[in-house]
Image 1 (cartoon, protein in one colour):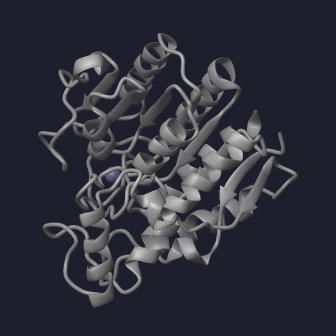
Image 2 (cartoon, helix red, strand yellow; image 1 turned 60 degrees about the horizontal axis):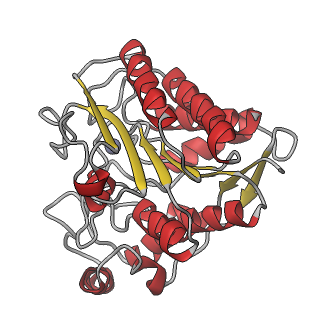
Image 3 (tube, rainbow, N blue to C red; image 1 turned 135 degrees about the vertical axis):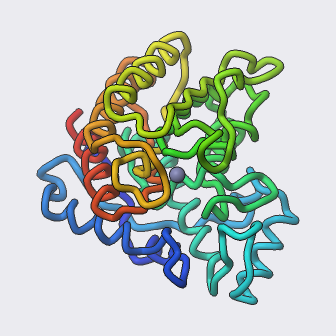
Length: 316
Ligand SMILES: [Zn+2]
């Protein structure tokens, strides 16, 4: 295997909300700047791939047609909101969001084709978008599309999804809540104190998926110690199941100094999680792991956390 595929290119920077919004291209630029300092392409087990745009048909694997049409229309207008006030429309936002989805899909395709077993899409991980709605800065849910692609189009039996963003991954949790093909584990700041206000311990899935969803809310100001304890629970949980690939959302907004959240991790949290999941992928599913970015609104934190993720993916 040639190393970890990292998606890179100006198309990803287009996913940038205007007017001083916390999610702008500044974050990704900081990440690539640090990555260039710390890691050499090929020598360090990292190689870059260009962003790919998802087709409308691919978006429809997860999203409703009405919603896709709605985004198109708002995007043409180039103003207003796609939800109730967190996620503004901007010119070409449809294309920008489609590049995010297509790039996560491309990494999944590369893994299935055997070109690599590990990938990272720093602009992916848009876990709040629902089948029929935007939410929390997320227009299209690249994870949701990837899950349907892997299971419905490519015939995989089961996907393990792990989410360490400070916010609960509601768009993945509830839109696959009764799907036993998706093993879900999410560590986040307690929903009583942060958007989207969900992800409680008693939410464990329903129907045939009862017990297959693990939500671990942490109180505000929890740090690395609490994270490690929670993450070991995730590892123990995953040990119980078989799956074909790990999808890993690595939001960096749980780090101390994030302007919109209250957890206090250090970048070591991301290194630990990436190392453990890379090991688990080796043990369980032929090393297959596709990691994505997610939240993170302090550019230095984003850069440090995600460089750690890439390093750990590359070490194997
Ligand atoms: Zn977040």
